[in-house]
Structure formats: structure tokens, C-alpha cells
Image (cartoon, rainbow over all chains, first blue to last red):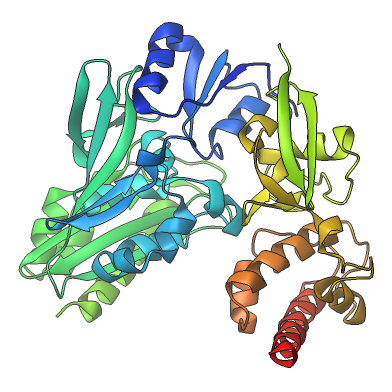
Length: 277
Length: 164
């Protein structure tokens, strides 16, 4: 499987990358780890004349923990996320989720930025980022702006990112000490997307719950979080199951996915509660 | 499309060539450089037969454009032999423990196992299975592959101790 030809660019700073996007419009796309884009190009479902590789932009590779938040560069790979001890100390849910993404080879190249920016409902990071209330930094010709993960996803592959913008950084407020967490994912095999997955945080009178691949965007339910914060597990599960809209596909009929979603939610909530305190 | 000038270091040797940016790394290795250790299995980043080591990371070379790899250091199964050309430890252990039947997946298995043992020289059986999850074998049922990798870890650690 050979993709259609393209011209390759490897800019060394963000301004040049945006310049190339401005110059070529729809014809150009950025590539991070490439593990979503390259398969689509090989199937000729993505057609572009200019590929803008972000690998040489050093600023996008940093992980910083300061001022009560974690700042993760868009080009940080899943492997780097997993092996970063500082991050595992303050936001262990990231490692727990990243270890359930794809396989080792894919995690060496697949990036956090690509995973959140692609807008694929099957990706794990978008739901997780909604759970932890992340904000995405977008840089474009007009400058820099931030969009909350909870407001970023519009439909499958449609996000708040403009065509000439690049998602450069993810900022996550650090949960207070003693916050319980869990990421649960049901998949048919290693490398598959989730049949259902869920991210849960519980602690200090607050809670947050999000789910993955059960609608054409990730689903974060404020009602589920409120119920869970008040200790009402069944209320939280009911609110979440009411908010998702699974579709039948090769992972099963909608009713089955709802069933799996309920099982995973209860499991994740129980584990997060055990870890809280 | 215009071809680009690609420079790589493959198995310790500087190589260069002209290739279209869309050329996949696996095709460049096999067709331009005639390094045919890495195999094309599924070509969809599932099976891991095309696994090579790129700048210290195991990657599926069917899902990397040669343009992205420009400037990288690549190690393939050919590069894992001893200096005198005899089989390296992991290769020898795959033979010893019968870690293959048809052998098609073996170059990817060995190249991935090499990186796994670099990062974790004393893995448990579970860690080996988790670390090898990106490589499929349709013959062995994995049992002997796992044995071969655990035996490689022991052998490499014994060699390291003897050298110290």
C-alpha cells in the first residue's frame, strides 16, 4: 500500500510550520507520530500535497510540572508519557491510560498531541483529557489561544482547531493530593480501539467521569460527576449511560456497548474510590 | 514527485539514496538498500514483522515514511550479530529454545526483544509478554518466543557480570 505522492517539510519552529499551512491551505497537513495519518494515506482516504513534520520543533517535546499544572508538549510520545516519573507521581491516570493504547511500537511514535487533535472518537486521550479538565493550546496566524478539552470536540474528526492552527501544548491542573483515579478500557485485542473506555477521578468532594468511543465525540457528564461527588454511584452510572450514544459496529450492537460501558464504569469507580484518601 | 536525498545510518554504516518522500522505510530498507531482514507482513502496523530500531525506539517500518527517518540511526536484525558475524545472544537463544517455526516474524521479534531488554534487562514473563504485544506470530503460540527472550536476559546479564 503506497500513498499518493506529497512534498515533505520539516520546519524547525512553529512559525515556519504555520507559514507552510497558510501557504498551502487544504493541501497541507501536519504529521506528528503518523500512526493515524499514515494508515489513512496508505488507504488513500487522506489525500494531501504537503506534509508538515513537527519532529524537529524542540519546544513541542517538553514536559513541565510547575504552578499547580502539568504542561505536556504536543509531540511527547505515549512512551515518554509512560516513562516520565514526575508525571506518574502527580497524574498517574495518564500512565494508566497510555499503557492501554495500541502496542509498544505504536507508543514509541504515537504522540499525545496527535491523539487529542485528530478528533477520532476511538482515541483514548480525548476522553481522558475531558476527565482531568485539560486545556489545549492552539497556535495559529492570529496568535495563541486556549480551548478547554471539554469544549474542543464537535463531531468525529471535527474539532475547535482551525485549519491553520497547530495544537502545541496540553495543560492539566494537578488533582489535589489523595484524589483517586482509574482508567478502564475494554478492547477485543491489543491494538484495537475501545469497545468502551472510561476515565474517573474522585476525591475531596469532587468527581469527574468521561467515556470514550461511545458517541462521535468523547462524553464528559457533569451530572455523573455531581452524583459521584455526592457518593451516588448508581446515579452517576445512570447519568453517564444516559449521555452516551453508542452505534452498532464490528465491536458489537449498541445494547452490548451500553452493557460494557456500565460494567467498566462501576469497575473504574470502585478502583478510584479505593485509591482515594 | 521530486525525490529527496535521504541519509541514514543503518547497522553502523552511513548510507544514502534518492527516494520519494512517500516511500515507506521498510521499502527503502528492502528495495534500495537490499536489507531484507525486516519483513513485510500485514503492512498495516499490526503484525510487527517490519520492526526495526530507530534512534533507540522499536518502530514498525511500514508506518514510517523514509522522509521522517532521514538522519536516523536504524538497527535491523542483521545488525544484531556479533562482531565476528556469529549469531548474537538473542538470535542464538531463539535457535536454542526453538522460538520460531516458519521464521517469518522472527526478525521483528528479535529486533523488538533487543530494545525491550535494553530498557528492562530483568523482565518477568508478564513484562516480556506485554513488551512483545506488538509482534504477532501465527505458528508458535508464543511460548518458546517468551522462553527465548527470558533466556536471553539471563545470558546477557551473566555476560555483563563476567565482564565486570
